[in-house]
Image (cartoon, rainbow, N blue to C red; front, side, top):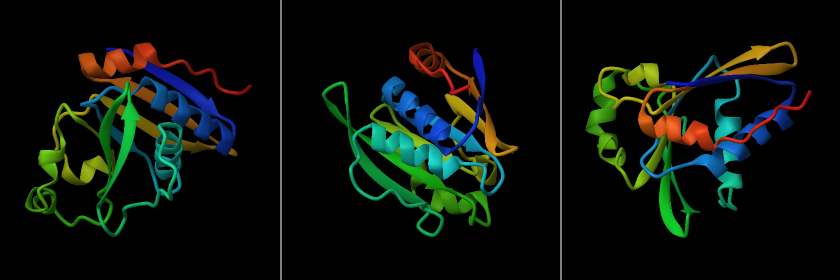
Length: 161
């Protein structure tokens, strides 16, 4: 399995990475975002969704836990579900809400704070690790499945120097 590591110098670098990921998406992906508060998880997701064609507001689903978005991917409408599990008290909340059924071959699931539901989440296809570094961010993209590898093979991203 492959991984890519980048240093993003500013918010524009995060937006550029989100746009590059949007161009590499495949239906059925589960992407898990790891990082402290303020590391850029929602900013990356927002940039990805806008680059994938969503024109409206992208809010953090901190209180709703999940926000669905419809995008066009290869002339097919695909639902992207953005989860934020930060406020979950136990993994059972994830199951009780019926969120697991969104993880299928027709949707793309992006999960912030996946460690809050480790025992009940399906395996990630791509783990994204974000950390603040100076005025920018360090990012590691790690494929954990064949589908994740396919996505990262399609990724065309060169960070600003």
